[in-house]
Length: 495
Image 1 (cartoon, rainbow, N blue to C red):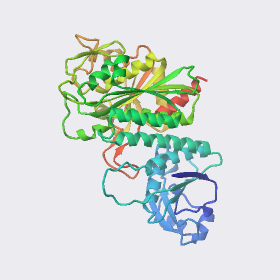
Image 2 (spheres, one colour):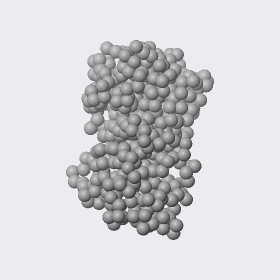
Image 3 (cartoon, rainbow, N blue to C red):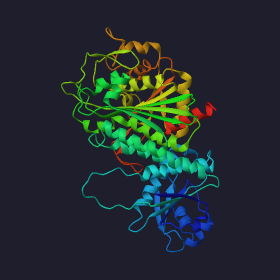
Image 4 (tube, one colour):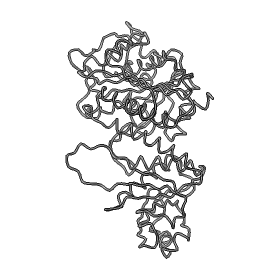
């Protein structure tokens, strides 16, 4: 899709649909409304369109303007419009415009008024992020499907200096959509080996170094926890290591680690068959890391980043690891397996330990780790568990600036007692259901030594079970934007 920033008067915009954002109690400039004989302001005055958040109204221009249609889109009260609502508004608006294109149409322009508290460039960035997110379509495997109208050209009526921020918005949005596309794929269309191949293609394009280790390579590296999870599978694991050398490889290094369980049956501790089909998205952390590295490679922040994806599926055959097994990972710590369905923390721990051994001085990891995250926070915020308060605050700030929402969970020393083992350094689950998300996150901290580490448990946000006006059913790409913003802040802090 062609994306352009234009600075033309609205009366000069040539488009099939011109999206015009309006706040409640807002009005349209007479210059735009005059050729329409005041029709827009008449609609506002009559109450046909009030500007409530998400409200829409389509008007034909009848040739009075170069734009064929105008789609009024409500932005609500100006003081209530934050960056998340702005991004979502842009996505909903362009989806509505796409739906109204009809046959032959392909150009949409979007013009929002100045946004309180944001520069024109910042507003345009979030508008672009939302628009490209909203326009994304997932791959279909249907043999017959109706042809749908699509947007070939998106014009952003922007501020004078918004071009760099618009490009940032596009890069981050495309990275998020990459993560969504990868996380959407069924397990038979994205095995660990296929994920490795996809990562190689992404890194070639983004200028990022990559190494992909097969099963033999994993054994040579000593990735005992990843290999244990892989024991029951016919598919080999992959250990994917990506390096972006924005500071010439001289460090300091930021480490990003993602859980890459391409399908999770639960193993011997098998899950209920109900909704098991959607366990294809259990590698959403891996997708987020891959998307982030694509964006980082294109944005070129002045920092060094090592990113690790530990990829496998979790299957229950006669070779599968079992409850009660004791295994040792790359960190040298031993783990008593109490549930093979708590496999994500095992593969992540090997990834984190590897990043530490490679010199990462700060770590961020993301995964669909625990169902307890949904119980604790619902589908609103992801949970954050850390071993260092200052680094935790830094990552949370990055998330906020990126328009994503996390929530700090406690990491008191006593929580570590909940997953003690009588026969190993730790067990991979706690006792009962107490503090499940905290236990899962702190398990990871046992494998990084003193290195500051933040884990984002994105289990409740990584997948939408129902479509809305902003996005379709499926993967959301959560955490990509936080990873990218954290890398930029890391670069700024280490100039």
